[in-house]
Length: 240
Ligand code: IPE
Ligand code: IPE
Ligand code: MG
Image 1 (cartoon, rainbow, N blue to C red):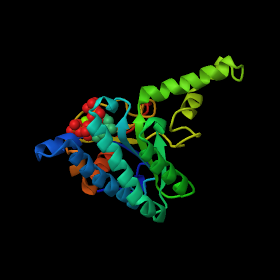
Image 2 (cartoon, rainbow, N blue to C red; image 1 turned 90 degrees about the horizontal axis):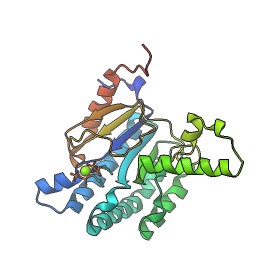
Image 3 (tube, protein in one colour; image 1 turned 180 degrees about the vertical axis):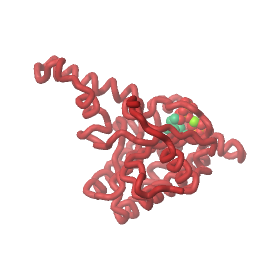
Image 4 (cartoon, rainbow, N blue to C red; image 1 turned 90 degrees about the vertical axis):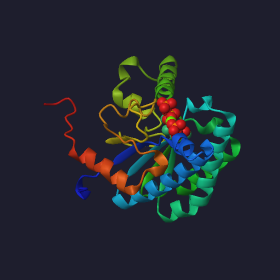
């Protein structure tokens, strides 16, 4: 049973398995992404119900550009549809949307819809919904290093000032952007047991839960099962 008093503050999800879900049904991959969007909507709603404060989903990685143009275009089209059709509900539900990743290079209409959503939900105080888009953990750390390097070169900072807190502050989850704590729980669907460049810095001490369920088949019940698994773990953080 889920213990409502010990909910993770931040859950991060690698939404994987859309392609295999479609393949099993002889459908085009984009149909899998469409089904995946519907799951995402349900999980956002359910996170809100469970009182989770931050939900981060991995929607598109810096490596996903390697896929066919048709698939990439399809994914961003679905994102536009999702964002446009959900905006009012997100506002009504007091959800604050943030993006992790450099979204300057995504297709123009997706960027526009997203910016509108960020702007119109920025003062909301309920669930914070972070969408990792064109996100890569290494890319994020590289950007932080570069900014800090530039500040040192300009004499604004000394190398001794580089602390873990400073590095963390310059990541997409830092206080300039999504301002989110490290996730206590990272869930990956579809049976793959790897992080695929997701939240590398932030997940240093996260509990990892892997499930064979393909993302479009992931349900609020499966979600609660993953949280139960998290609650059954003993977290030690290197202590005894
Ligand atoms: C995850 O599903 C969604 C994205 C990476 C955008 P996949 O498209 O990776 O699905 P599989 O892994 O091929 O089944
Ligand atoms: C990770 O899934 C990225 C997202 C879910 C957006 P991938 O399907 O791209 O990861 P790999 O290629 O199996 O490692
Ligand atoms: Mg995949």
